[in-house]
Image (cartoon, rainbow, N blue to C red; front, side):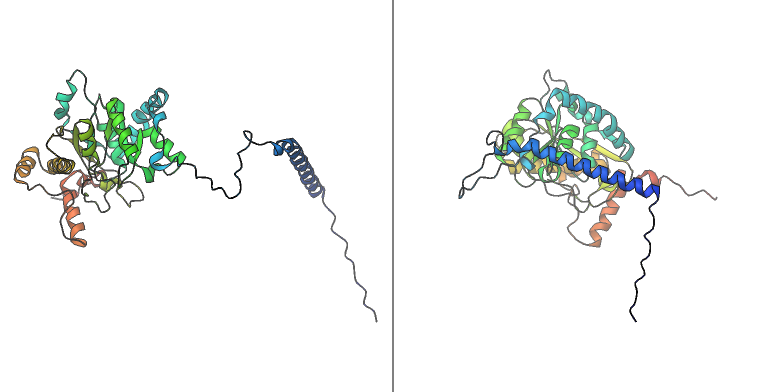
Length: 350
């Protein structure tokens, strides 16, 4: 006996479904029409060559790669033009200052040591050489540096970090007046450009450590700042920043509001009979003494400096948990031990 197939009636489309399908078909037809019109308009240009299109290279010829415009080759001249300077003044005096005050609340001391430079008829451009524990250090320096240097301040920034993309580099140049330098070796081009900036009255912020501290202690100074000072004759102002490493140090996902302290030292001038290595050691010793002053007082730090017993910026020689324990004790002596969230006091129960 043959089997018969039952044909079920298709469900009737509702008016809503019919209208939706019709709209989709209409949109598809419009898209096809636009695509066809675009191809028809572009068809005549396919036969056009140079200069309307990029020139082709003969087979077997290797075309040299275009020079990089990122990293140390990023052009930041636009950031020192009048429109960019006006925009940066608004940013630094507004959002940057407010952020630094809210997170770090910096106490600035030692500005009287720059009085001799300020009183000069034409104050020279200087090189500020602070220690470096946090990305917040740059904002703190922008807020703490006094006039006449504040309005013409250039920050030397790591080329491989801040200038690895066009967007990031443009923001860094506009907001911070950042200039790209290689962390390891300052190239001839960067050196000549920094020298030109100093000669035209722009002061620099250069972190001699080359990067942020990886463990909360300082690092040995590199000779870039000393080399530039020797070549240009610009004085170096040693600076110690205390507290920012515990607020937003390397490896922290988010900042923790606290207090900080910025100590400016007396300007250092290059000597004719002093090479870059010895000059760099003198700069590191000056910043070390300022670090001791930030945790104790001026008299104690200078007595230790005369005896060569200032605590090292790089911390104790041992490793492991003892080094971290010493860092915690070290921070309790300074502004890092005065976090806002630690202002609570136990009640006096008598």
